[in-house]
Image (cartoon, rainbow, N blue to C red; front, side, top):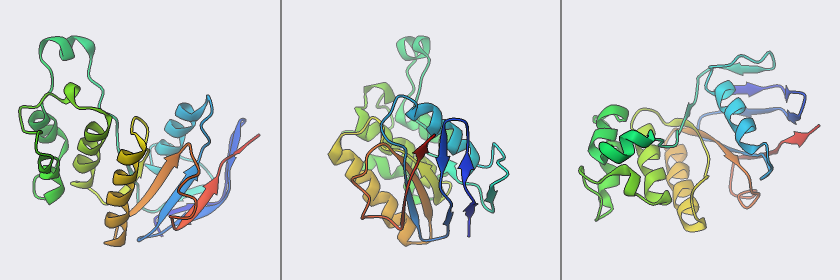
Length: 186
């Protein structure tokens, strides 16, 4: 068991109890409400072991698949390339580190800020998966096809000994996960 949640309660919401073990995907439905982002950041810090909660035992911290954000000045004058991003964020001993190059038009010199939502999200996902197979992720900024592709990649990783928590705003994956938990607003 990696995560043992006995119920996370705040002033605004309650996450019912659940456990996460190797080989499982937990979909945590946060609803697509105005507080989605704040709730997501709060929960990713708990599951990542950065914030302690008396009702959550983190036996092994999960890594959040971060969104690529670049300061405006850097974006204008010296944009980050895919190669530079991977050198900083990926483990090249793992095949996921270079998996983004399977997309024909992406190479080391491609500027990350020119990537649309789906490939940009895949870049972050592959970099994270090159370091760990225990993740917390979301499908924000992705269209339905890209979200489906990302979810299939994560399912494959989980099937091969990983684990994941999806922080999602929609309920379309309700029947395609190990456990489905709905956040309750208080």
